Length: 345
Image 1 (tube, one colour):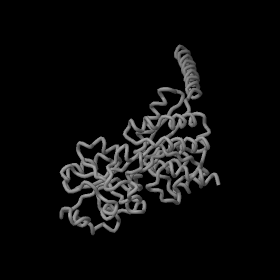
Image 2 (image 1 turned 180 degrees about the vertical axis):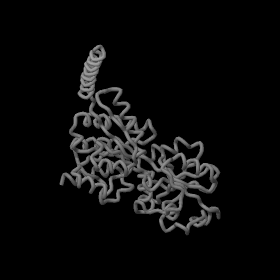
Image 3 (image 1 turned 60 degrees about the vertical axis):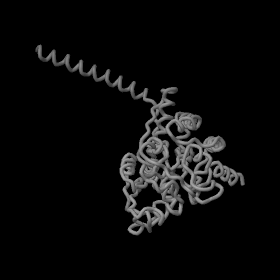
Image 4 (image 1 turned 135 degrees about the vertical axis):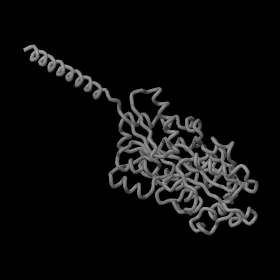
């Protein structure tokens, strides 16, 4: 009998605990913060993370996650309606735009900063201070594979030594932009080079090889300038200055470092932008990105471009400025003005 009574008390106690747990869980569920999901480019991630951290110090009412699936991987998630914002180190492609359209996803494209792609060499390289875009193309184009093997194959004044190339992998937005800017077509490149998504691997490879050359984001060169040398780029266009231009905050911002100055973007799902928490976050993002982008090593847009980007956001303008156009080398403020003029007609 005692055993039966004890068992009954145990059942009642368990039921009571269960009810309390359900009540607790219910409170947690009802008190869950709204979530904002950001994913995409590893290049843009430091900017979005800096904005998110700064925003959360001022408003603890929302959970913000910032992932790094890469530009292409981020657009895949965005096209599946899994994220609110997609970070991108290149414009959205025709294929990615079509996927969004098929899923009834409208997006607002917002340029948020500039990045310069730095062409870098070994510290012991004593023959190269500047390089032309034509020479870079001769070095990197698809036709160069198995043919252009030595430095002297590019320029007879350079050493009769094998050249060793380093660059980002084919899934990288940096790879896409470089190949379009230099070779004339995105993803068109020789494949016989050391590729890595990890910039540390590229730095170590170039730093350890006198006959190496590679490319990656300017911010990463700035962090490793004690190990590498940067090469001036000559686009042979007088309007950008005579001779080679060294990438810097100033030359990227004023548009003279061409054609390897690129805009960085966030893409906001139009439906998500109607949510108060997403609107408030993007408002904060655009108001503070100039300062925060500079702090993490990138280049802020000119004031005029920032003003036009804000107008684009406030107007809820959907679509891309870049689809169907080769806008490499065009200043962002000029591109935004052209869009405004076209829309006004």
